[in-house]
Length: 357
Image (tube, rainbow, N blue to C red; front, side, top):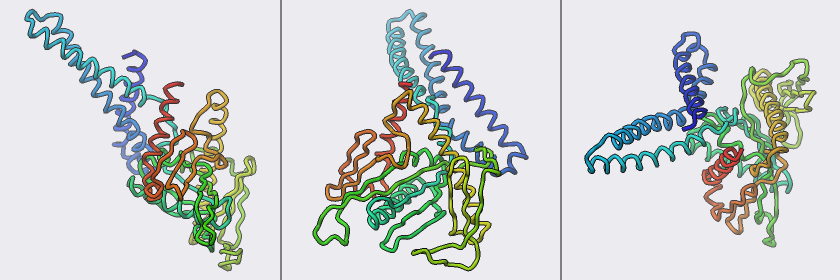
């Protein structure tokens, strides 16, 4: 193993020990947010340290085999030592390759909870209906991973589905599992209202954001325009008599969010602030990634919601992810939330690009 790699692993080991100490401190124990953040940081090191520990144990056995090979007089012992040297030498090489992948710089947002926003786009009612189908798919995927899902804002469509729905996903590394979903999702199918049996093409867009804390994104309160208004229902009619809905606009970026589904103006304001933080964080994150992509071309894409990333063809029971050229003839299974095969393929591509630098 190269010295630089061992130094990085020892630094992670040291940081893990520091976290253990910090998490026993009474002041930290009483700070729920800090405990959660430290717990997630510790969890991010778990697999790396597990493989590194195995490497150290294997290295010790390998060195013992080398020593035996050098000192043994009897042919049987030399043969045994040679076998162990080859076996554990091969294992060391495998573990080094595993550690190289684990040491690829991770997306700092991976440990965060996720906020997902789905909008019906091209195709009118069909786009909204498909937005509802995607929400159902993501809910089932989240549940399969042990995550909890909570709707933040929903605008149901009269024809079914949603013109917009946003929800939070909480658990261990939800952003890492959902981040590849940002972009335009195209559906090809025969609408229920289609009498001629013609296939229509519609689109829904998805934006996945990291749910960040206040101290993780710098926002000048003077840059925020906060407005209150009455909540509106389908068709634009007012659904209450008080100004409980909250709209927040960040003037430097032009990012604006509106929340009206909370129980009170205070509740809507809190949700809107979370959404604006997440959007501004994602805005700066994408800006950095776009600058980096001028140096290297990523197959995974920018995560821009206008970028067409996937097609769902119902007549052919086919799902195609255009970023990596992956086509699966199992749309029915995928729409039930079985997204693992697609997500793992995208993750593998990200790792490959990380190794290639």
